[in-house]
View (tube, rainbow, N blue to C red):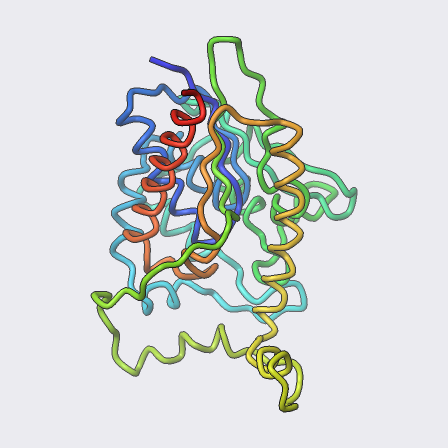
Length: 294
């Protein structure tokens, strides 16, 4: 069995594609000997290392728009509008408590210390505290107070932490980038529609808009951007540049890229579809690798 060091990147709900990649690696007979994750990559990777990934997948694929919205514990502080406790309490119900150093597979979660301007690498301690710190998207999820620092999403400094891998000669590095190039996705006609009572979900996409209504194409596009769209898109651009540099410097043996537009940051109710997108991206990456070696 080929031994794999798996690096899982950040990217909101697109992180569910990591599940599909992990399933394909196991199906193809690879042994995952280390997992390093950032943000949603840390969440999926950490849960995988506990041995409860299948339960997590079953829960995700059961979610509807209403379920997802009900998991948002709004706080409306100046540091973020979601606490995130509800989600992790739910996950904790089927995984139980874990210490990182006691996991069956070595695991690292990456977070960002905004006071001391450095990365924090969790390789020991409470798993869920590490995951919560790694996923604290600035301005969205409230930051985590940790010792003498304040921690936010690891993607601020290192969205694809390839530099943390220390592999042997007979091992390979597989990386999953959730900010891949845009692709065309046909509209899903068979997705079950929910009743109008769930229209409050759209609130997340209708935070105060920017711009004006001048009769130009650019201005019309601008007026459709909500505050959340603007913040999230700007954050994505920064992650793009950091990811590109990381891949160039620390080139993985297999790079799997998930199209950024496969889903929006909070569309966790599309789990089954996104997990399949992860499987497809894995197959595409393997086929590309084979063709390049011919």
